[in-house]
Image (cartoon, rainbow, N blue to C red; front, side, top):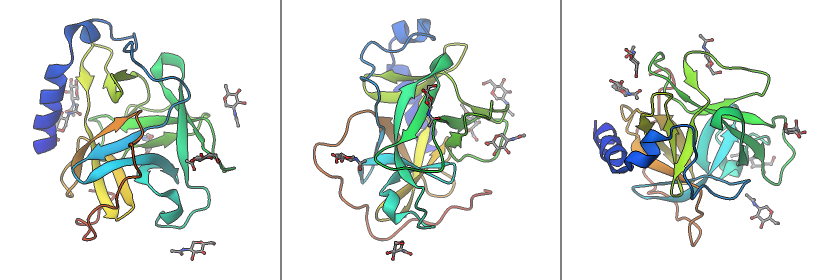
Length: 199
Ligand SMILES: *[C@@H]1O[C@H](CO)[C@@H](O)[C@H](O)[C@H]1NC(C)=O
Ligand SMILES: *[C@@H]1O[C@H](CO)[C@@H](O)[C@H](O)[C@H]1NC(C)=O
Ligand SMILES: *[C@@H]1O[C@H](CO)[C@@H](O)[C@H](O)[C@H]1NC(C)=O
Ligand SMILES: *[C@@H]1O[C@H](CO)[C@@H](O)[C@H](O)[C@H]1NC(C)=O
Ligand SMILES: *[C@@H]1O[C@H](CO)[C@@H](O)[C@H](O)[C@H]1NC(C)=O
Ligand SMILES: *[C@@H]1O[C@H](CO)[C@@H](O)[C@H](O)[C@H]1NC(C)=O
């Protein structure tokens, strides 16, 4: 509930000009390609990374499955303001993947990536990504602005990214294009309740 309240407050702060121009990117959109960094309570700017089609923030080398294909993602803006990602400094079995957030048509609240061959479905939203300043957001076709990213602390260097869900102990996060000025500290050592991926 807190995240929803907070997102509502953030939404209320977005100027009408942005709301009236849903297809235009905010003027201060970052230079491309850009990376995204997660910020929230005790989460000080972990880079967004890809692991098995899902979005995490932190250190890909510490991914749960120790997956050599996990890598930090660098983005460019594609058609309809999709954010298309490629691995940074790594050769992986994925490339040109499209960031998605779930829609309210699904119970699966995890944020992830689609392969370029996949056009998506009604359970996910892949278009309308934009920036307010350096903060990532989604602008719906009707102009509604949503900033509903949440993060579940998996361990000291891994946070899993969710959308509009605090039910497993996720905390509200923002995804920003700005890197932290110093390497982000580990999150507190006692992890929150682990996620039930099917919750
Ligand atoms: C992950 O893989 C690396 C290299 O293959 C290995 O050195 C490391 O111990 C592994 N870590 C875990 C947690 O399995
Ligand atoms: C990629 O490599 C550059 C140059 O070695 C380095 O400065 C940068 O930190 C690396 N980025 C990541 C995400 O590892
Ligand atoms: C990714 O997409 C870009 C633009 O469509 C293309 O130039 C590039 O070759 C693609 N890269 C891979 C590895 O598919
Ligand atoms: C966020 O979740 C709440 C409660 O599950 C739901 O009522 C609301 O429609 C969701 N909002 C969006 C934008 O998906
Ligand atoms: C999802 O959101 C749309 C508009 O935001 C709304 O019309 C629809 O009723 C919602 N569906 C559910 C299942 O909550
Ligand atoms: C929609 O796409 C998501 C992400 O790939 C997938 O998890 C989900 O099963 C798909 N839903 C349907 C109804 O195909």
